[in-house]
Length: 124
Length: 111
Image (cartoon, rainbow over all chains, first blue to last red; front, side):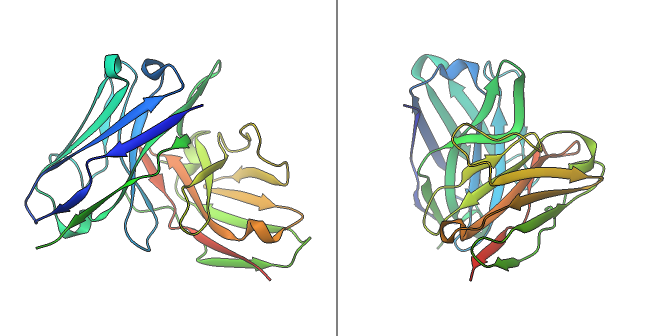
């Protein structure tokens, strides 16, 4: 059974930092691209960042560039998101998500498994 | 890049069919096959319903189908059921400064 379990969320002051973690199990972690997607309270979904299986390809949403860093440790089946210079508008539930992959290849944006999310609140 | 455009709300009666549209540009929806749809019930995690414009993940009912014409993708739900009442989001690969963009979401009400 595929499982994604996030941790590391909490309350942080504007300008502060936070590191999110996601522990994966039930699949060959290194095969899959992994992403972070966030959802502000009562709002829609927003893609945050993506990292390929071998960390060769890394992408960020426009408002995250220069502040967030995605990484992974395939030996530990873990995904990370280092968030610096946090702003009030970064307040959201952050989901760790897996990107679909089969014999046809990857399907960008097809997030087939989601963690339960971890809440990040940026407030003074 | 701006979010993809979805109607804020749609409604239908049980047994009917509804269509949710998702409009972008040639740089995203219109430019390739990577369009997905997600269903999210209140307080729940999003669920992948359609990917690659028309493909359904294993276990998803064939009442859900996807299509695309030009820069607009569509999700059709046929034989509406009360449990289909949820928020629906489209997502697309975007060949610009970002990799993936979502639509703003559509609230489906089953009357």
